[in-house]
Length: 212
Image 1 (cartoon, rainbow, N blue to C red):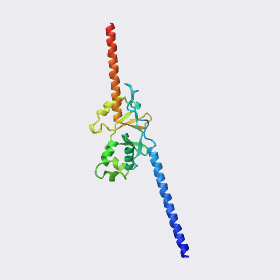
Image 2 (cartoon, helix red, strand yellow):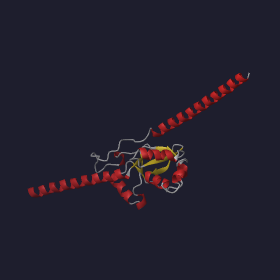
Image 3 (cartoon, rainbow, N blue to C red):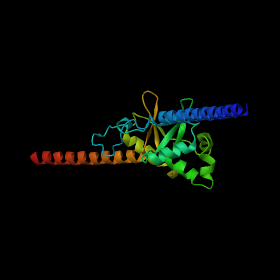
Image 4 (spheres, rainbow, N blue to C red):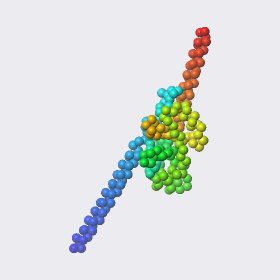
């Protein structure tokens, strides 16, 4: 009788262990699925800093925009993983119940976690905790905005915010992120194009004067 009782206890323990393993597996599986869903939308298109198709009338929709949105309930350590994995990601769009809430830029995130106890404070907590400490007044522009006009607006921002990513609103109303570095490079290309056009025009006028 004692032997049967011991066997029963052993079998019950094994069942408990198996049930716990199944629960852990399900939790891990859910976590992996959730994380995969989180990473499915990263870039709307590949970054191309040497865009040769720009014209004087090019707008923000002609540039490469980042499509990355995370819910404010996401843990801070996941955002840290994203920034470490995707080195060109300028920031993340924060949403709440799929509604646009704001932006956390790479610079703002790194500033907060580099402070004393920053990792302990924010890694295991939702972005809600971090978001409270970040001044959030992102520059929001329509994707129809001319690159030249957008650059002027960016340069008029306070010095501390000049390099913060821009929120670009598509005609569908969806937000995207634009890296300021890409905008400035595009503006430089347009400036070179304008200079070349003016040079060509001056040469043509000079030829006309000589003919006359």
